[in-house]
Length: 379
Image (spheres, rainbow, N blue to C red):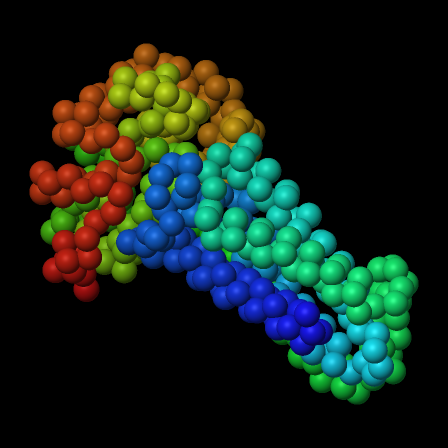
């Protein structure tokens, strides 16, 4: 085929990869900030783009992996543009494109392994980028083999010489790219880190007559009872959303927290382990409630990323203001276990089978609360 056809194929792959990465970047953002969002490829437990986006491995060096993908494909398009500066029969910049594609292909292999062995879920749109990276790698090698005159390593040196001979033109293409990349890397918001509004720490709080911690309005117009699991991503997302909502409506809304850990060790509903350790985390929160520090401990536990399989008692003690030895000693106290079992049994009696779940005026809402339910109570 003619050289221009190969170039058109490579450009098409790069633009397709860029579009896919932009979609994944937007999806990653919406998964973390939009309470009602669900991507079209959230199909099953094992084929679920949202599960992959929720994992800590979806962020690399302070940027979502999808954003790194966007910049990678942009760099390939920039290098293809510089290739037009070459004169003569031998085409340049394809060794550079090959090595960029090789780096992204190797990264794709690593991400695929993480999805398989750690996240245990696959993202269809991510798999598409893996395929595009491999096709670009092959195509860059093929173009250089057919239209180049040297080995790949020597060709890389010749590519640099081409850029040096055309500094002004190359600068027009590369300087804006690297400037935007550095700027985005420096100012990109870490929206995937959930933190309660600092004003929410000053809200009224207490314990209900049934022994459940509450925060918000002392005389509420609306009471939301949440049943949560500390290792559940959606629970963490919804909890901090509700905390922010209460901070803006402190006189009308109250949040009551109850526990429903999807931990086989504590929850009879769970036949296959889902969130190991979440029952123990609930017991830590219950002990903190007896010491008047429930909401501090609650925020700490929700802030722990899912990869933290082991709970660092010393760190929790330091940040919550509770003694380490008391946390370790009281976590298995019979009264705390009894309270946890009461929460679980009450949830089961309401027909709750997963988290998060919310009870408002006797009605149960799973995963999220429809905006029209909350709207009448918002200032």
